[in-house]
Length: 132
Ligand SMILES: [Zn+2]
Image (cartoon, rainbow, N blue to C red; front, side, top):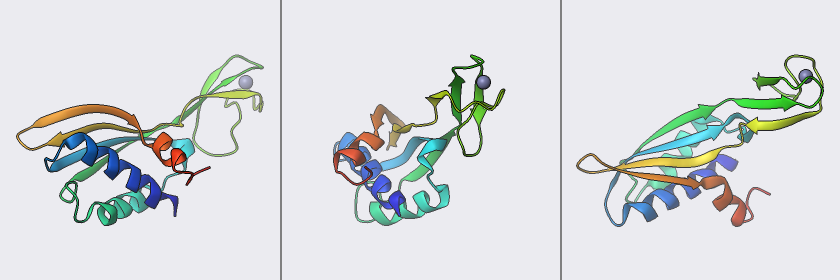
């Protein structure tokens, strides 16, 4: 269940950025290609956040659709299912433009205090050798 390691990274980033204050809300961008099950991530977040400053935090997930650019027809299309191929001509010669995001965007603290983070939770997870 890789949602658990992702949740761990999200909580670590949020708590670190909160600087000792309780976290109210965490907003995360999750690309389609990450194949994250949203309900599993919410569940894992609640589990991991227990007994941390993010315990009361609401996890807001902003899904990012996958987009590819085609080398054959030069079209850019949104991909809603696998396999990854051009939505216009069906070619597999595509480069991913969007959809690999896994980013903690914002956290909200007490007194309507929000912090823009923009930290890549995917990198953090990969750095721990969990995802790759
Ligand atoms: Zn194409």
